[in-house]
Length: 76
Image 1 (cartoon, rainbow, N blue to C red):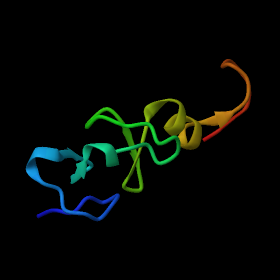
Image 2 (image 1 turned 180 degrees about the vertical axis):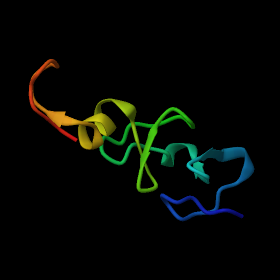
Image 3 (image 1 turned 90 degrees about the horizontal axis):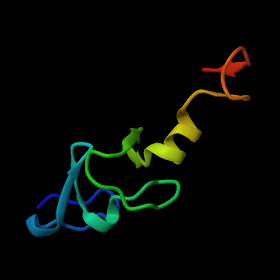
Image 4 (image 1 turned 90 degrees about the vertical axis):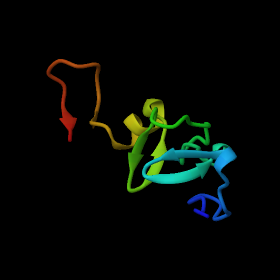
């Protein structure tokens, strides 16, 4: 039996969700930052951990800077 990467318990076929190349329990597949429950394939990944696209992933790992676009300064 595969083990869930979050809780380390066995994942049975009826309760498994496959994402990031691993099998998860449905309630265990959550955003690492805000703990929002995610659905398979509709989230971002960083260093093997799931994150919701907005706002967590984009705020943590997206381009930074200030302003709303244009010629302002940004860091990448």
